Image (cartoon, rainbow, N blue to C red; front, side):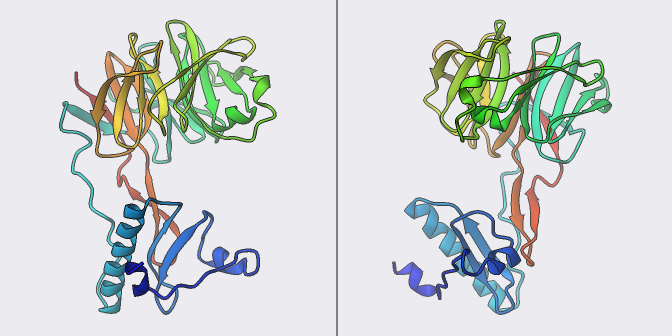
Amino acid sequence: MAKSTEFHWVTVNRDHTPEIPKRLNVSAYPSLLVLGANEENVHRFQSYMKADELLAELADGTRRWELFANGEAWDAPRPRAPALTGAVSVRTFAAPAANVPAGMFSLGGALWIAHMGELHRLDAETNSSVARFELPRSALDVATDGTHIYALESGWTAGKPIHVIDPADGSTVRTITTAANATQRAHGAKGIAFHDGRLLVLEGMHGRIHELDPDTGDVRSTIQSPERWLTSLASDGEHLVTGSREALLWLDATTGEVVRRLEVAYPLRSVGVHDGAVHVMEQPVFGFDRAHRRVQVWPTETLVYRLGR
């Protein structure tokens, strides 16, 4: 409470004054904004938080306001760790596109990388894109059974289909719909993989992994990981591999239990296994500039990280 007295609080009712959140580019609620006299974006943050997280944000708001009031630069991005991890060797190369990553897999000796709305096949020597196909923009992860490509939409949990794609030309061969999901409203599918011939879908927020019938889409079985807020799913042949905000995780494919954990400095978005090595891409961190325009803060260069053994 003491910290809150350092601010002058103004509550905006979006139903009564919709022009204000529109002008300030607010689309998530609750959002807290620290504004200058001309509505400069001094600091802003959103979503429900634990008490210590909220106090940290308020402290940062105070720090930035003091810089702003003194005519100093206030909007430098928070620093981040210089490397993804120091626990294993890491090699990097430029991703084939700059937009949000949407999965990786290995097929035909090549690494394939999806970005929002597009899929690229990379040259084995140069890691440059040699083929590009379109994907549904809501596809968040991709996998292969060795013959076809499977693209998972985030809305699978609400009845959206899995797209089965011909790797030769990018055409959709068929779709797989899980009929039982059609009456739901949740949007939480985050990963897809084939492991030991089984088609698996990750419901990331809850840490649930479902085995699907590849013909009907029916859920055959479900395992529960103790982890939550997972994203992307891959197989290294022995374990399932997935990412989170803090770590890369190897899961027992039968129980979902964590068998290995690699701490990382950047939140992960996409995970894939190629040429015997785990590859990851980070979740972009977005913010807002001084005029409340949405901008990508990190990474400044979209990279693929190949992790050593």
